[in-house]
Image (cartoon, rainbow, N blue to C red):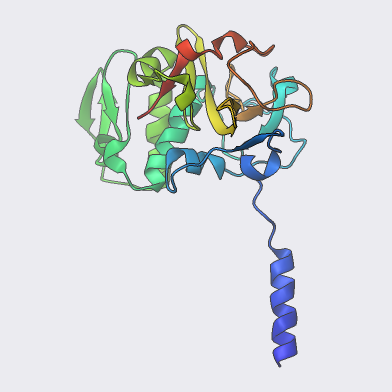
Length: 255
């Protein structure tokens, strides 16, 4: 009987695949070590997001190969939706909103529209709906995930890089760069990248992984800096779309 239990245990352990995320997929550059993050933090949550199988193409919300596919190092396994909504700033807000939702920090889920209207999740979950920069009670209370995603799609429609840049806080010292920080330039359209992981050497020089969505809305892709190399620095402008934003003056953080 003991032998049978041991065999079953071995079979079960062999069938469990190791996690596939930015921590396991990408080799740390020689001479660098992983930046420590607080357990339960936004940075730690980002690092554990699952990736789609290696070689997966970045696709638009319509299912076409995205024009940024050539820059793909990996595709993060989160939905893109079936509308042209989850673009660059939208996916950053989606990630932040998802993190807070799964932490049950509902009171902290709030994003401002370009108009300045504060769109908080509590109002939406309690049945209020947006109309001309006002809340109108129209539905029942519902804190379920589908309603949360409806709320996020509302945010995607009325917020963007212009509003998100104003909500984020400048990172005054680039040496304080961490996962979850954002390189952003507000505009029409503007653009932004989110930092997914950070490594550091003995001289306190940092390299980092970046992810983005784009126009039209596409999968959240982890970017490659050059063929076969995935780490970025602020010392050299990379040859990717909007690579000129990878500078300290565009660096922002949520808190």
